[in-house]
Length: 335
Length: 220
Image (cartoon, chains in turn brown, purple):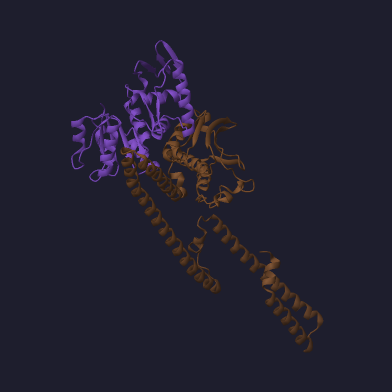
């Protein structure tokens, strides 16, 4: 708040003062006061008024500065009202009570929403936990009675599993940092696990998977990485073309290791490639009725951010799509 | 035969898992959970324990710790609980491995094998069929003094067929077997490999051994 703005705020008072001064001058002049006395009186008036304005301006300004400091030091800014002392000024006190009421309702609202969110989260986790039991049982039953039908059932069950996993990891995304164990892993291990998890579907879709140089080691969380790879592989399957081949290879690069998942599928248009990691984006490929949800790659890139993996995409329409995961060398790996 | 103790509260999973492990060549012990598990371990003396965490009478972590007090038997946790904390807990209590439900069965078998470090790994032993010797270590096929070198894929295919003589092996079964052995090929590629394999067999005088049953699969 500058002094000018403050004065503008007080414009009615100033107009009133000027009017008062003018009225007094006329009155004093009429009753015969001399010009010099009049000037002295007006000068004193102006002096007192200026001092009053300056003092009250600095007073106000100080209060605002204190408030600003307070709010920027607060983590949850809506709790400001709790931190304020009671003002001495009667009008400010009224404002203070009103603000407190508003803030109180806000705080209740927030904690209520938080509470509901927590309960929902708990429910989802519990639910996923429970649904894993019948999924496991169904897989075992099919495995023990292998025939054409049960193979098809397994591939459906694998799909159910993928959807369940997505739900779980989406629910967990808010606190990935509490749920990982970083360890040294051979890329081969995670790739094999991700492929094995979707085996039936990949076989039935006639997908060939080539792997190259996957003996490089990176530091990451195995569980999350398997999930990310699974999503990328499934994405390739969804947009496959004839004679589908997925090539998974690792290359060392400046400051880290790159894992590349390359397919010979339908590709992504140049105009859309920037948006494929957005939530809900399915693009013109997705609209051709392949049941895209636009959530798989979004989850990958979000999880990647949390795990410190850079995920990027490169593609040519009608030819290929390549998703690259870059694992930076941490200080840990250098020492 | 190696013996595996399954401690799991879901009856269906318990019996199906037991059947699956039997098919994979393991003996299983499936105790009723009302018994004292430490007694069961003491009596049956298993080579490996598969342990669930959510159990009705006593949770898996505690059980694991108790077993560890008197036994070094490898323990694999199999559970639907899958946070990093659960995994750490499991390993701190003395578990050797941690597998999440729904597990992938070939992965489960691989982990079990890794822990048991089975010396009798079946596909390292050479195998013979009608005078044809297949040596997996050098990846060669010997017949009447002549030999042919096989690729990894060809070796695995031959090996599987030799293990199941007289049985029609559907193509899908062969492909699944190959995928479980980290060779991820599609149906067309399998045909290519079969053609090449037959050529190589022909070169050393093995002709017409692998027959194609149209629409059903292969048989030797």
